[in-house]
Length: 181
Image 1 (cartoon, rainbow, N blue to C red):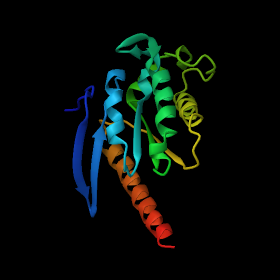
Image 2 (image 1 turned 60 degrees about the horizontal axis):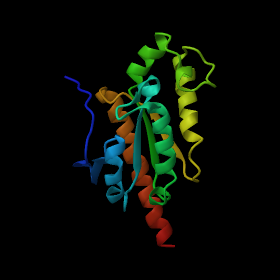
Image 3 (image 1 turned 90 degrees about the vertical axis):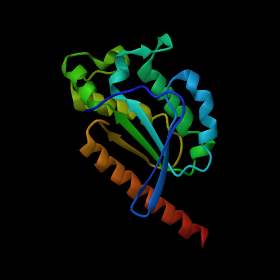
Image 4 (image 1 turned 180 degrees about the horizontal axis):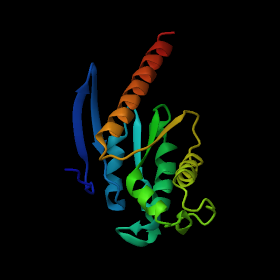
């Protein structure tokens, strides 16, 4: 059974993978939840920013005049360029690619959100266009790692999470090395 559920409030999950301990804090995406986030940003090892690809034709739950995708792009800009994450690896997870593919293949054009999009109903072109829109917001020097994901596909999420774990591990080791010089 796979379920998609809206997160409200702060949800913390702690677990270990091999010799690494993780604490993931899901902060929920609604605007009224965002004021609670600042308490979660200190001393983080990485930022995992989930943005639903399928939201390009929807408005915010709490504001019918704001497009969800545009809100996600603006939020990514604000968070990824924040002082809290200037030394943290950033992972942009463009989620719900299964729903996105269905919408794009069904000729629900991306231009409803991005008037400058001219790729038609091509899934790859639309995905790359959205990726570029997010990445052009980031002004930092660190690499942003981008994956198109489907959180209900456990195989996909395992591969993505293994990559995230490896990158965090490598960056942590590199930081320790440079501090000892």
